[in-house]
Length: 165
Image 1: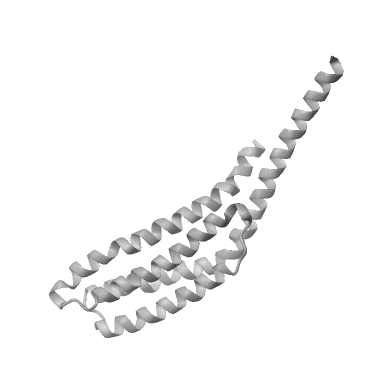
Image 2: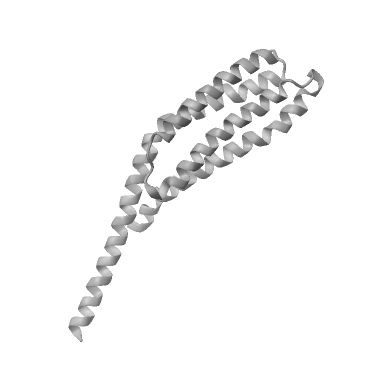
């Protein structure tokens, strides 16, 4: 009976240790994936924060003609597509495929948001602000999708911290 009890205790200890290592391995893989896509995602974040968002403001407050805005928007979309392809070129661990799909979706949604602002740019001057306001939810959706992807990756990384406690 004592041998059986000792075997059960050893087996439980091994399962717990293996579970911890699995969480740490997953976290390490998630950290490597996050590090690999980070430069591309930072380029995308910079593009959105430094060019796209202020560009919408420039359009709304008539700082740039709509034709110039549309030209810039075409360039932004091309840059986002390049970034999307770079992120897609990084193979995620199988357990982060959903996060990778969310990153991809967010970059496509940012492109769609730019399209929505381009459509708004054709509105008459007195209706431009309202047209831009109608396009804002597309950008908010892209932000939310990106945040979900980030949270998914971070949850795996943080999971190992909880397993090690």
